[in-house]
Length: 550
Image (cartoon, rainbow, N blue to C red):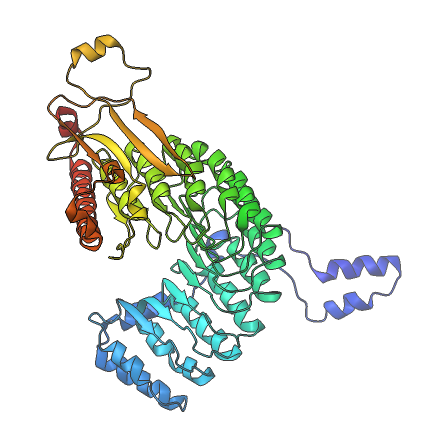
């Protein structure tokens, strides 16, 4: 390597006869530049905070407690009894403790500095700083300590509205550099201007997998900034954006772009916003681009109506990975359930469906029963806070005689003062009766032939008739093109005979009748779901060879 000296430059300048004041000033000390060989470039290095933590791993609780009290004395603050009590729960000092809960504790700058000895000696699965009234200097110091000592995997700094620019800068640095932090909760603060810009920039290269941003005023430009960073993020798995007043116009367009370009996000929570029908259309457009990412979509309380179900009905058949769909607290009604009934039958990915408080009555419950009878993968269905009466429960109970996958069906208790009119709209179903739900053969590609029927002469069709209340009574025939083994007994369960004016004497005691019927149906639904759960667990645990032999 050639070394350049100032003497050579000075000789050149003298030959040219021009003054060189700058060269003379540089050559006074006779400085020159040289580089050592490659193997000598690194002469020493500094130990990371983990090395110091390993040195403190032999500390007992008494020593850590005394060290914390001594640190408080040096910083002229009182030791927090809450911290001392939580330290007593630790079994292995220097290992991983469950939680350091400082929720509601007022932590000023000196109190944060006193916590360094605790963060240095222990690692916590969860550090809760919610509503800790963090000041700008104290928050910056505390976040720097958490980063340096890698003190936690889950951090909650919600409800801290006094964090200034330096605090958000420290948080962004923590998000970007930490190798342990996987979940961050930042709720009930205003993520506008610099905070959302710093957070979004850090998310481009962070290791976070779970991010909660509820009630942070994301609507508009903040959401645009956040989505711009998450489009290229390949690590984040869960994004919770509830209670942000997200609208059906610009915000829905940003969320559509997020679903189009991000195929690694698995959970998206948008509950308690204003996505509405127009916004759901944009989300459905984004879902069509998902190839292997989003599995959970929560849209509870988003002002979605029957019109929105039309957009969802077009998207459900093409979804391949979505497993959990929550549409609770939306005005879907029976008509909305009828619209998505057949698309749900075609869909092969949805395992959990939330329809709590969706204005569903017995008619909608019967439509869901038809879906349950056809589905082979649905596992959970939530119908709480709906007007599902005895007729709807009857349809669901009959459907569970066929369905073998549903493990959980949530319904409400029916009031004892049930009116007779609520019982009349119920299905007439012909179903096989056996001690266990029959196992259905796989569906045929075409209709059954007479030759197939002669091979199984005692087989019966599964059919049902539903009396709908639409001003005039009409019957709708529902046929399931499958056969049942000949060993099953054909039992016809019908409540249409209640229309006969000559009712039995015991029926006039409607309260007792409804109470007994409700108890029986709920018990039957629970037992069948439990049987499905046991069957599902046994099937999952069974080796492949056993499955083949079976």
